[in-house]
Image (cartoon, rainbow, N blue to C red; front, side, top):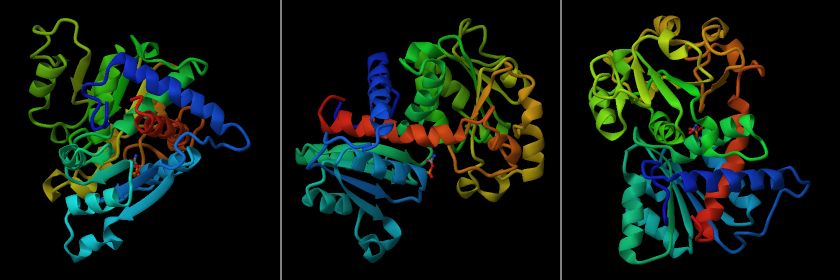
Length: 335
Ligand code: CP
């Protein structure tokens, strides 16, 4: 694999390779020096056409821990403000010797378009999708997977550890690229995945799309898919009942037209996760959130900061080792 744009076609072997490689880099990060010479001489360009805190910073730190040189681009302070196009921007970074382009854009498909242009030019540049519109956020889903798997077996994180676990994904699924990437990895693991969202925040055609692609169980479709991996709910309770993990999602106000934006108080009452809702889950349930968080909307401030339940800080920390793994696998041609 030359680019990482989506998890839709990731294989079990690929997931396990990322998890095991990330585990070995986590060991490196626990050493005093925290650095390896693996990508010395390579250039990693972070092309962020949309804002980011954790993805951009952790890709930069991951590249530095691998001894690569890093270039950081932010659209607002770039020559795009003078009319330069996305592809011309990418070609400019290519001309500077970039080996790996980490791309985020608010429109779906931009990383694919840059990857296609690099392939058309016949250059060995890898493109890594760091979040494109409502499409996918593969590195986030992989770090979520790593966070969960290392909790179950720190010595040997692997996809099969999630087989049979009940995982609830709650909230603004309509606008969530994180949910889309997570659905692919969790389904591949054999986990039982439950989506819970208000009807306005589930894609209209999602049920049919998922039913074709993955197999879905909604009341209407259950007869067609007797052993489905994915369940849809318009209420919170059935998704949380006996769940092992709860993934909360940010209400993406910036992607909503006014008529979609729910009352934040009502949303919190119906779909917000607090310690009270967690009583429905397994006793040792853990809660994830990709960040950034709307405190007190999708998750209570108290729960977010509760180390007994919240994996939010671990997710951020895991992101460095997982992104080191992705850069290493692409940079060394082993992906
Ligand atoms: N989870 C995530 O993508 O966060 P950032 O937008 O801060 O990168």
